[in-house]
Length: 54
Image (cartoon, helix red, strand yellow):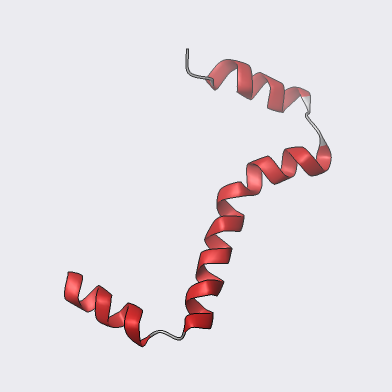
């Protein structure tokens, strides 16, 4: 499995690898970007309060 993944990574064009990385980065930071763009709402504050680790 590892050899197949390494072979696939080597044969993929660098632009495709960068595109996938950027897409995953945007998806990972979407909650933070949404708060920055639209501000905090009451729902966001409740989620922060109710689901924050103690």
